[in-house]
Image (cartoon, rainbow, N blue to C red; front, top):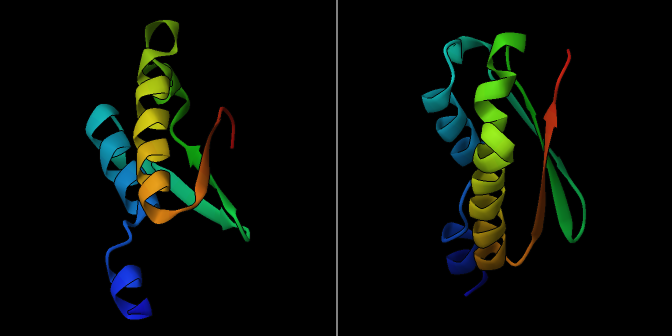
Length: 89
């Protein structure tokens, strides 16, 4: 039964990467890294400097929407995810 629960988990890193690549002008410069802990996981997102505003959106609406999706998936995976948008490389 353990294998079945592992198969149903969603790859959050790939999900964030797909969403972000659809929003930016330079999808080849999108870098998503996952730092995994025991009960939580940090998703670090780095994009081209010209695309940071597109990811954050007006009043942070895009960033908030991506964080909500990540949070919802975390509930399914029984893990807490934190999305960090890195503004410089």
